Length: 293
Image (cartoon, rainbow, N blue to C red):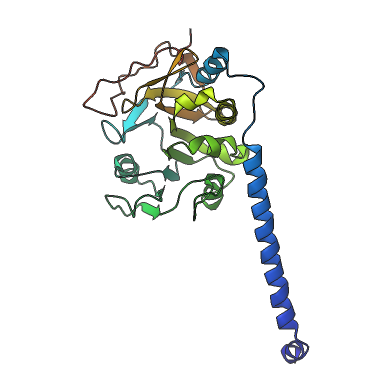
């Protein structure tokens, strides 16, 4: 009887109209939020980028030792290999952003029994399949400018228990990492135990707006993490920015400060685990400005 009455007075049509209005409103709010986020990203510095500014940024990525843990290399001996702390027992999910044609690191995690969700809009799938792989042909894009892209913090919200710190991130997304980390909500970011990221295009750091974005990104990471490893990618050389030699592309591993205790700063960033990304060229010697002391 109630169903007949609802149909008689047109309530289903009204409810459908209301639901559509709610969806439209939600879409508009999401679009407005994305635009607001995009507009807030470039924090313009007053004046030029100074040498001290660059040294401060690099100093935030100078590696420290970790009490009670050793580092390990997972994946390829050259490009495609990543450095982590050898502590994966509590990891429930690996998020791998930018896989290209090398998933040797992902395979190492899969063989440890860890599920790996992979993101890359430039390939149709991983070059090697594995039952633990879940591939998504999507870009990681904080501003949503790439069609079909997803924000990394939205991915984090979809996996696991939000009360736990049990995720691991491997990310190589050709420059979009700066915007991603600059806007990453801290409560979501600190769900990672370890982060290994390849940072790109240091020559752009001379631009005040870009420098401010990069500084915001690293400072946001450093709210919950500290660096334990840094390595220069020798497929490209050094950029000379305000007299400071910085690799155009370099890799940094961060670990969660709520779980790990930082030891002494490493006087020399280079590690026996390091290997040239390009095996046909000598590795880049990375010392100052990523060196403390």
